[in-house]
Structure formats: C-alpha cells, structure tokens
Image (cartoon, rainbow, N blue to C red; front, side):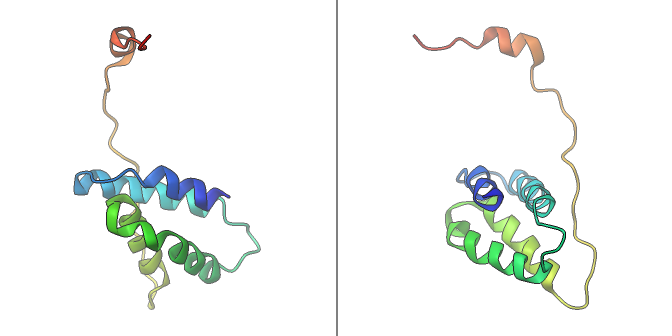
Amino acid sequence: MLLERTIIQLDTGPMPADEARQMGQLGYMQWIAGVPGNASYAVAARHAYETAAPFMNHSPAVAAFCDLLLTSLEQPFKPLPLAMPKRERRGGAQARRSFRMPL
C-alpha cells in the first residue's frame, strides 16, 4: 500500500534532474520507513524495484527512486546519497492569499 502511494507521488512526469533526484530520495525514505522491521530488506527492495520499474521511462523521480533501490542492493554495501531538500521559501501567506479557487 505505501509502495503504491510512493510511486503515485513520484510519478509526476518530466522535471529537472535535481528536483527528480530530491523527490527520488524522499520517496526512498518514505518507502523504507514503511518496510516492516521483520521483513527481508533485499526481498522488499527487489519487489519495490519491480513494481516501480514500469514507470521509470516517463518519470525521472521514479527512475531516481529505482536507482537508489538498485544501489542499496549492490555489494559491497556503501552509504546511499540521501539528503533532505534545501529549505526554501515558497511564498507563504502572501502566495496563499493570492491563490483564487475557480468558480
């Protein structure tokens, strides 16, 4: 269930490479947080990759997510390049006030 939600959230179509990388990292962190503690990581990661792979061609964020899954399964193990996105202002109250719902 969480895997499908993660894929849907990542499958947003074309975007800049840096944004896709950030979204892929956030998707990976969301997915791994939902993997049960008693589950086999390798089995869960392979299943996640097989489920997400069909969406890679038209979504760079899903492709970044899949790259992280594959990297996490490589031997010898190495740290994954995960980071939270840089904090930035997006308009705040002024942007919310200027948004009008269509009638």
